[in-house]
Amino acid sequence: MRVLYVTSECYPMVKTGGLADVSAALPPALNAAGADVRLLLPGYPAVLNGLSNLHEVGELITDLPGCDRARLRIGRTADGVLAYALDAPSLYDRPGNPYLGPDGQDWPDNALRFAALAWAAAGFASDDSYDPWWRPDVLHGHDWQAGLIPAYLELRPDRFAGAVRPGTVLTIHNIAYQGNFGPWMLGDLGLPSSSFRIDGVEYYGNVSFLKAGCYYADRLTTVSPTYANEIQTAEHGTGLQGLLATRSDVLTGILNGVDYAVWDPATDPHIPARYTPDDLGGKDACKADLQSAFGLDRRPDAPLAAVVSRLTWHKGLDLVLEAAAQWIAWGGQLVVLGSGDPASEAGFRHLAQWHPQSVGVRIGYDEPLSHRIQAGADLFLVPSRSEPCGLTQLYALKYGTLPLVRRTGGLADTVIDANPAASADGSATGFQFVNATGQELVWALRRALTVYRKPERWQAMQRRAMTRDFGWHGPAEEYMELYRGLGR
Image 1 (tube, rainbow, N blue to C red):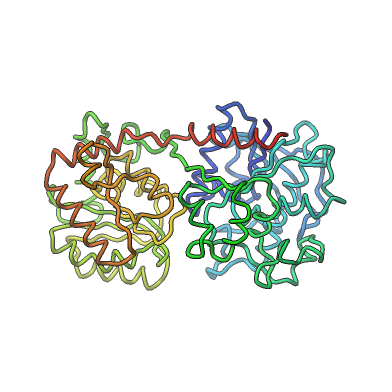
Image 2: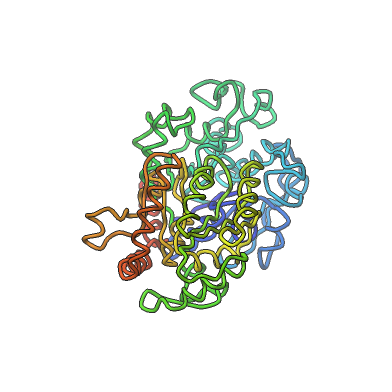
């Protein structure tokens, strides 16, 4: 089964969120399951510099949207996966964030930049000049940046009519990001005017890359079973719920996994002491290290909560600000790593200024520090209003840092609440709350604190959490079954 995996991010070359981690970990797992997976990535400088043995393949591409000259180059990722880079300097040779310019705003030509990526992916279906030795059976695109792939195959048979049409899969990592652009872009994107309709690419008067993918793809997936149900509702569907409900027979929720070669406290090179479920002693040293790194009081008995997140309303971080005073009054500590809304950043900075011995904040992102936080904290907070899957709570489980989450999306699917039944049978791995209010978060923190004050029970939950398996082998098998069901 030959699969072209089309993504705009891949760790460690380029990362703005969980998509990069998934793009790095899922392809090797699929290859181990018997697939022949190759990546297609935009030719950002970090990608061209990050792939080993990079060389040109195929012929010059002269018909990309927004670009009249581009090359495909092929190399290998750090995990040995073959990857094509679409080398189009006028589109991708830019510093910093892959989507935002130096002013923090979207690049004004993002529509063309990611239409070109989708166009190149569709080209593999019909054009031997791309790679004469390899043609995919499945085109698997991720998020809105790849949403036009199935639309091009359907709407432009004059350009993409191969002998055998590959199956198409679109994975929705976050439905809130849709790639919506003005209708005047239609021609520049290489889409026929007839496609600008409700049964096509039109979405509330705009061209929507994600809507196009949801409408034309053979199969749709998202990153947890609960989220697959949620996005068919008005609360979480962001306007696409009606379309997704009509396509529910081809929509599947497949839970994301964790790359335990990267996230494992028994082997993690970023943390000061290793530990395992059978020997948790190293976690105490990690906690002391974390308190020192953030300038907190070195109190081994203080319950230390952590946040590693975008600091936005969507992530529920305003609830943490609301609940923080009570947590501190109970003797708790808090560390925060992330960036986002200026108001949220300012709120956490002020909290740290008011309580310097109890609260530490780093604005930005630091991959090694995120590992140290996972290892050193006692409790990991993910109070999201909506969370398609979430990866940080999965990392927290592996590190014995008990997650406290709002019951939504993948958070509901992965964390077992310490309610009386789960506590009695030993299956609890964390704490959940339902309504997105500061008061409910306070109540959940109080429940967690009650357990924390009972070390034997807390450590039993830690060991249970650390032994849960969220590796990629299970999701990879589900994707393989999905590919086989395409019948190509």
